[in-house]
Image (cartoon, rainbow, N blue to C red; front, side, top):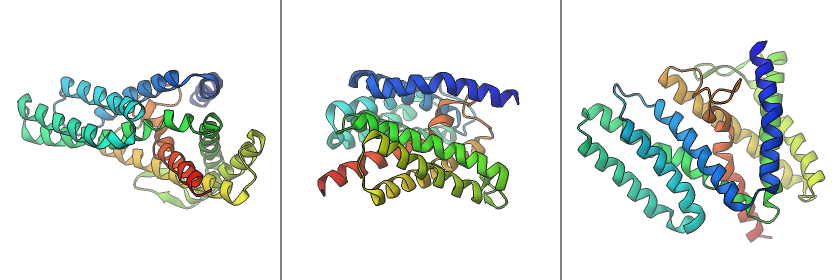
Length: 271
């Protein structure tokens, strides 16, 4: 009960702040927030690496590299992303070669850091480009509303009607009924928000986008659960009272940020 109250209280404080930032902050503020999110999430991701001995310098290098990717995508564009990724992975290997760590820890940590660039930094780097699309602030808020509704409905329906486990080995509490309820709730919230925000009358388009976000959110949640179960932890961190870590809060958004960006970009090209 205390945990639920803490969760609600934190949401009541953070949601208005997030909405205000999305709607009114300038691009550099959005970029700065994205960089902070990437740094915090990458820090928690570092802690999930299955190594016997931590390399603090390497952890800091991973965090800095994640921030570099976020800044590089904005200032240089996606075209120059490949050289940055290759250079950073090369730097990871170079650090491993000169660090003097045992080969097991060194290889696992290097692979873990490289995955972090693709899993965390790269998707987060599309927050600011998404915000700068036409009506981008409303589309970014649309994404957040659909994901929030998905999480809320999934939890509510799962608790009341859940009977069939969705993936018992990865996330024992998630149910098929909860997943269906979450996607349905997200679609409804997406329709309502799209009409209120004037994002277009195309119902099939809104259904496809909202349902896609819901399904991808489920996969994002399960993906992080795989990492946490492998590391033997319940939460990625404790920075957000009642909600766990930063990675716990953005797991449903990670894959969805580039999905919505490219969905809207491709749709604009073909209309």
